[in-house]
Length: 295
Image (cartoon, rainbow, N blue to C red; front, side, top):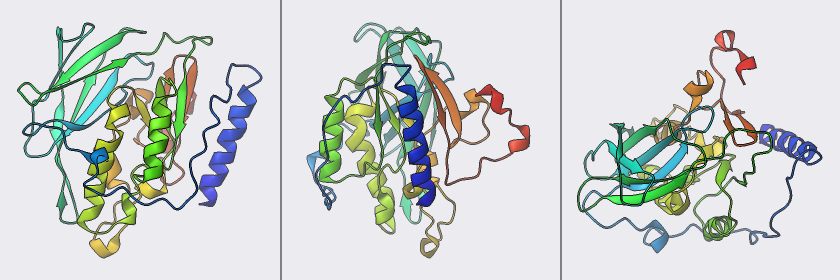
């Protein structure tokens, strides 16, 4: 926890340092209600499963390259692998482009995940709205996203910063407030689902509910991920001793695009921002073969 607070204070210092040279400002007086807040029950509408057999769910996008001209789209089908294709284009319901991705699944204790699809859409144009479709039958679903402006020191762009979201009633008010802010993308600073508060199969189940919960935002704009201590999930009593397993299977990052060797450590550029993601809860990897000047 000490490392977390050191990192948080450092990040806050860097943020304040940038106020003198940029247009950063406080955009809201919103304060989340006091603790404690109870977890939303599994049968709540916030976790509703999309209609249709094997319909795509838990849809989320993140930046897919170093400079903001690609996205990684991820989604889950619960019963069997779905179509690997993403249809997309610049006009609503007119999908003249297609990309093909991959599918995988995994187990955590006795929980077996759904089928996790990932697809890279690259070569996108800056400052352009794209519509995309997942699935190719009556259970297909449609979404959209907006690419950032071209990289420039003065390019206007509005980020939301969210961390420790969880899936409580307070989480719901926080997400709803963020979605009213008009921000373009999220820098998520760790601690996603708080599934580590559960045991056995409920850990995986709560990752699924969280994915459906945040889809109302994550399917339409990129969330850039950073892992926190609640993603470690070191649970030897369940024979689960590999850190970050659930997180890494579900939430890809563009680490290869920034020449990183670890998905928890990466860098991207977006509009006027240069973002470096560091993980204080994991080793970087082979530092001898990494040129930090690339960042």
